[in-house]
Image (cartoon, rainbow, N blue to C red):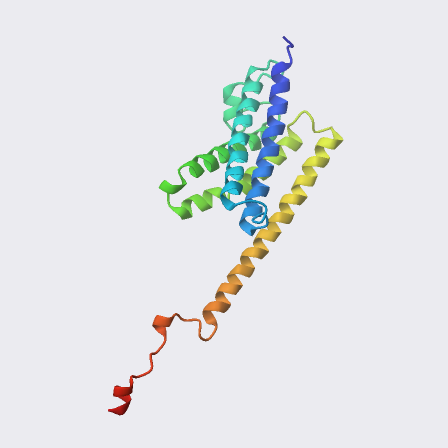
Amino acid sequence: MNPQIWWFAARSGGIVAWALVTASVCWGLMLSTKAASKASPPAKLLDLHRFFGMAALLFTGVHIAGLVADTYVHFGWLEVLVPWASEWQPTNVAWGVIGFYLLVAVELTSLVMKRIPRALWRQIHRTSFGLYVFATYHGMTAGSDTSNQWYRMVMLASINVVAFLTILAILAHRQAGNRQVRSVGRPGARGEADRPRPASRQARAS
């Protein structure tokens, strides 16, 4: 067996996990702006978004297990699970550890979404942006492929895509909020039950 197989597993697992996190974040942003609503039924789109997240967690596990099993850098469970415990690039590795915990929090709360307050789930789910930032920074600084030009170009391209979709999501939510405010403030927007009823003929005659 190739003695570097675990190092290859760690590298490939980390890259695939980052790509899946990126796909999950982008898909979630497209769902929030309804940009992909015409492509498929909403239920299928949501299932795909969840699949990306769970697959990212699985490949992150491959990445961590590969680092522990490999003997080149000598990572132990403490170094891969505790931020700043690693002696090798402690800060760059720490962002990956923090991103891992954010990924776990997002996926676990998504599994029990119906059993927890909606507001709590929404706040935790928004940390996906931090997860993406930490994972990307970790991959660009601590990864062994950081000197690869294509690797860096793909990561920089993903940053532009996520930033673009985030701006679209913010504008879409603002536009929806403005429409709601205008509809509430427009004369005649009240329901039928709130409208004054005309007096009956008997009442007018009396």
